[in-house]
Image (cartoon, rainbow, N blue to C red; front, side):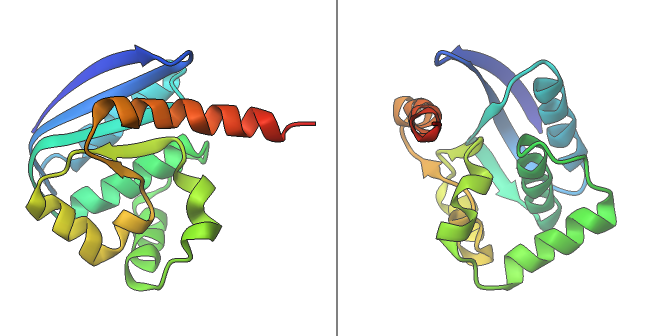
Length: 153
C-alpha cells in the first residue's frame, strides 16, 4: 500500500492520508506509523482518503481503530488491548450518540463499494463519519471545532 500525505489548514492543520492499494496484515502498521507521525507533528484532525483503497482486511480495520484511539489522545494500545476493543466495537451494537464525539477527529473519505460494505458490515460506519466530498469532509472538522468552542463557558 502506498500512503501519501497532504495538509489542509482549516484554520488548524488537518492531515490527509491518501491510501492506495490494499490495507491488510502485511502493511497495516504503516498506516498506524504515518498517523503517529502526523499526531506527533501536532495534527489533531485526520482525514483518511480511501478513494484508491481496493481492499481492507481485519488487520486494516484494527489499524483504523488504533488510529482513532490515537487521535482521541489515548496512549498507543498494545496489540491485545487494541484487538479486544476492536472486537467489542465490531461485534456489539453501537450507540452512535454515545460514541459520536469519540471519532470526531478521524473521518473517512470516498471508500469504494467493497470497502464501504466491509465498514458497514463490521459496524465501523457507525463509528466514523464517512464523506464522498472532500470539501464537505474538511468543513466538518471546522464545524466540530466551532461547536466545541460554542459549548465552552
